Length: 299
Ligand code: GLU
Image (cartoon, rainbow, N blue to C red; front, top):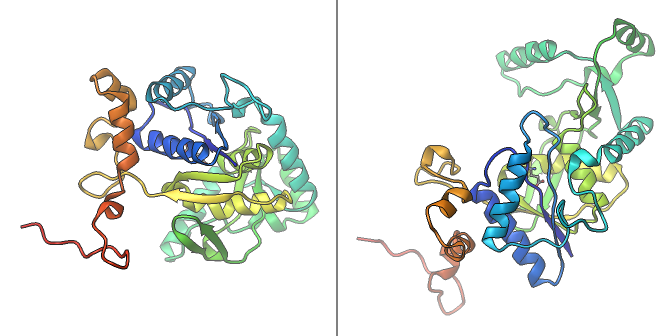
């Protein structure tokens, strides 16, 4: 059993991220499996060395330990995505060769115009697949023009069902699953590609992550299937929300693990709180058949 915490190092460790890391770690330890820390730093504009330091420092402070990671190495390394670019390039080349991916020459302005037009027509904006069907002549014309080209994944155009260990089945209609960019025109991989490729190459058996990433899952499932690999099991954790039921963010106050540390909170207290958050229903008294009793009204 192998599971991972795969943060993008763009700031402090959010308590929601800490909870994801904690659940992965507990799950791995419970099953005698391995827990891996993978740094997803391919967004070079937003990732910083300082943030990697905060991440590692905060996780260690919480007492979460990983068996493989950028600082300790391991058999599936390197564990920083910017050091794994060759793997993503290999996969993209293969997908291009098998026509599961294609070059897209659309400019950001053109995409934006079409997005606006689709919204105006009351349609869901999404890539219209235009460059998927270019003739060789059209393609050559774009190349001669020197247009930058991104690589898009060719989705199968069918509805996709994600089987999630927590949520059950989630249905995604084909109309919401347009062809998406897997490699930007500057040659860097997108998150959708890099995480899927690494989950395969690092032999992850379980992907436990925040519910905000559920829309990525049908796309990553398709990349993994196109690689001819067996997808991992997925579990999407409900997000931590504030009193207004909105995802907990800076608007609600301090959300960085580092802040709790500076304020003198004990790591055990934070871990305990995060571990039990969301257990409310499980802790409520159960009826004879084990079913949860209806909530009694608080006067
Ligand atoms: N790097 C992603 C993020 O920080 C998470 C990746 C994943 O768990 O698949 O949002």
